[in-house]
Image: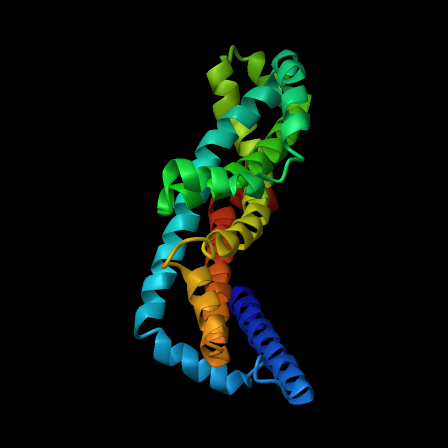
Length: 252
């Protein structure tokens, strides 16, 4: 009964948030009286019309690029972050390299990637992967460094190997932080995706939005914005559900 009430409360909160967002959008459109900010109903109608056509294709392309980038960044960053967090000596040698390269805005390499890899998916995926890689790496390393030592010592006393420590202590203990970094990385990935898809390409939500803007079709432009927002929301919910499954022990 408590679970049903909690789920009902979540649904109500979500619907209330959507209604409030639409109301604020409507008020802004009425106050501005600008064609660049269409009424919510007009934009939603355009979204429903376009999603049955080429907008769905652009959405699929963007979703593919983001998912592949996040998966690659996670596969590369998590093991390295755990390794550095567990081994202070190795971290002391590599940390200066991280400090030097982390603050550099990686988007400045986009022209280089476009020249080397072309205007296809590879250059965009590499750019998003590189940016989110650093976020996941630093968060994972810090979580591993701050791991409670009693967990490590208790498992070592039972004769655990380094692999056992990674598998049974560091990875489970760092999972909440890793998933948090993925949430943060998702927001960054979406922003970089939009920027990358406005450069020398004819596919993706970013291209769809800018193409609509160039034709001054503002309802269609907002249809693309809605599509990108829904994609980000879907991925965020996916990460939230993954945390509930993988980190169910946190709330025990």
